[in-house]
Length: 578
Image (cartoon, rainbow, N blue to C red; front, side, top):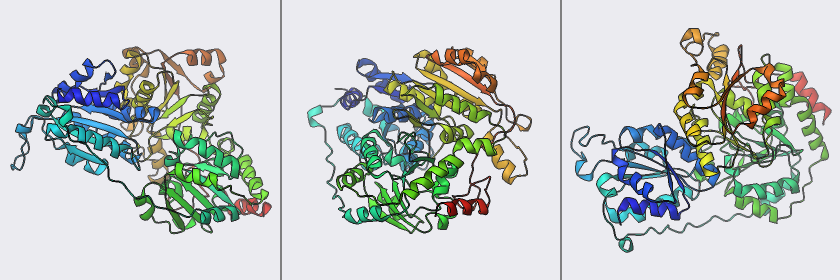
């Protein structure tokens, strides 16, 4: 069997049915092998970054490994953004890069390159992969595939990369003579969770924080049971959004630098935080970490021991646990929660007075972006996947979308590359062609990922693309207002930043186009027509300066983001509930 045929055979047996890539000279054998196999589709994209991020979306929706391929040199380097994104957001993806023939390696010669497009991609991606290797011997292909799959999905998931020279791809192999990989058994750490049980039962003001590690299909059932049984109020990080039905009574919202005010304010009183699969980075704690759970304890549950052991917060009980395993054990312990009902009364008062709706009414001048997101809450179906780009559009959506039980929120957290939403939406759609997807973009991120649009019309994917066009790089303009005296260098039209004609782009990519503004959202017939489309581009025109609100400013306590409320108001609220 030809080695490239074996790779495709192996991937098919692992349940992979779609591979994203851009064909090039050093992967022609591999693409031909995919072409010959009726069980796997090769999706020829129009930029390798599209392939690398689409594979992430596929992995997230399929609960399987995603796969993306590229040729050597620029093909491989173009995938690096997606590889890094998968690494920081813990997404299992197999990246396969073609490489020059083994006899064209420069090896230790003091030259820059021998083979055409020869590039040491393994050395480049080592810091942003769980495992990366060049395959030098055909007999090692099964071993390396097995090892790559195991590493990508075990422990804290993440990307792996196999770099395969062209002569290795075309080599003939005997399957029964291939070497196999056997993972070493790791000893699992044992914890006496009765101590944790006692801490939770004794807490007066407990709160649950769900991070990305707790936001997966495997954990959701156990998490729902834990929340029902304990009635403990709950918040999420950006990557945790979508882990719970946000209509449950004790859900407070998004925590962090751009979190909902009511969620952040609750932290001032919390005496026990149960952090499930969250890194507790400064986007959640704020830079003033001494003010984060100042008078309490954090039960920090994380699958990554390095995250637990390399952290500036000292008031933590570290539990090296998979979130699912932790929740199962806790649910089996029959917790008897004793916190006072006044804590729930306090939580409800925060929600009533400091919800995102209150925030918008009280502090936001240009409400247009938030009005659109609230309209999406009303118009989306019960299984919609929101795939959200980076920038103000991301935070407007995260703060304002109220996710129902089977809805999902997909965005990039750690790397946060503009241009994420469109290719990720495409990967999700190929993983589940029946999912209704709303891709939310700013004008900047939309332009970066423009080539992805061809795939939507080409395959008639059920993706509605929203471009929130404020004709600016809004997140940076807000920053420039705060710290650079309003000098808008490179972020607005008369300072070097322009937005293309989106209608012409829609026509070029054969997609239906709508241009609407805030007043059009009241036109129920127009909105119904738009949402009845399988796919289209909706340009939502926003006039004037835009802001995300609330927003934590530098060196401020997490519980009082800007625009800050007075100390008297904070104290009065607390006094009323003592």
